[in-house]
Length: 444
Image (cartoon, rainbow, N blue to C red; front, side):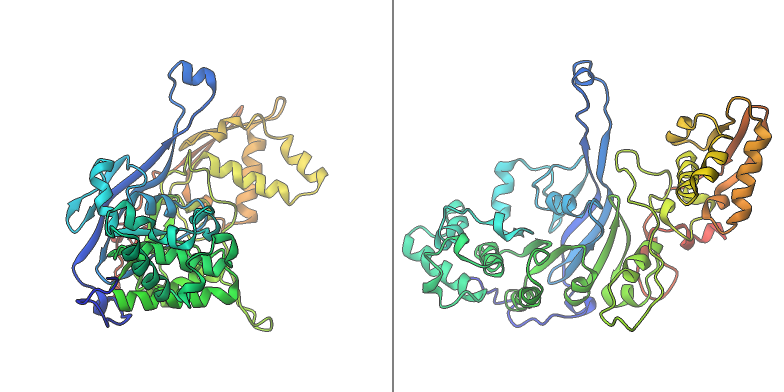
């Protein structure tokens, strides 16, 4: 019942070997969540903005393939996975299963499709109903979809699913409740529930991140074995590049709701193109304490998704950013604040006393006034900014400044025009796609 005869015996293969017909396709997908705002704003019907959790994502997933979605917390990978499963409605774009759009279907029409695509969630403690036995929990999808009509039929299929995931002898587990299992056993039971309907696509959202280290490899190997035996296709969500390298045929790197690089696993790890991908790889811990490797970790924190940076969303943290990447007023304020954080109290006061109210730098703008404090001259502000530029000429922000004009009351900083990077094929034989201006041939 769980075996797919046409796929049985298939081996975990490289993308060109595993790639079959396109099973899943995501086109220009956007998922935005409106901010609630305050009571008065809601009463007046004012726009309170939105979070672009997924912002124009495109990819396809071939039958028998494992595609990893990798990124930091808040990158949008879990929201993207939920949109694929039709658990959240997209704001724009579409999800297609074997060429048919499913993202606009009503729940009544989506429900039969859930037999073909099933989730495995991150938290095995919350995945299973604590009041159900394993026989009831794992067999519940059979009742919902009217697959097995008698208790004996359901027990037989539940027993087969539990045996497949390694919960043996089955008789010991049928009557157990989730609280009587270890974390690894709970996750195996959740996987058994996911495969019992014989799905084609499994969306695994951080399936091993909450498990003990000693258990992770075994659960990952179980997923590999199920892929081979049942011909499964996986969308694998993770922040762990090490498990993605072991498990995935291709990897898509996400940052602030967008895919910034996608390619075969071997090529991406051997030749990362996007600066964010390189930063993630350099952040992987080195197990040998005697082996020191250079690390260029991104500076600062992930930006606010409600008001993302102009241009490339990664540019405020990117060591390779230049003019078209999107430098703006907020970046200048962040640069000053980072400088002040490294100064002593007396030096900080001397610099801060030159500048006036910097609240105007909190709104994204390519043309901003840096005011002088009352009683100070614009030439003093210019001297301070020029001193910062001379002290750190390699600071990427200065590559984005088109000109600075000094006036009596401050300095007007003009940033160059920016562009939004699009995912395009890199100009090399690897076949990867990258969203980075460094790979734009029209910029020279």
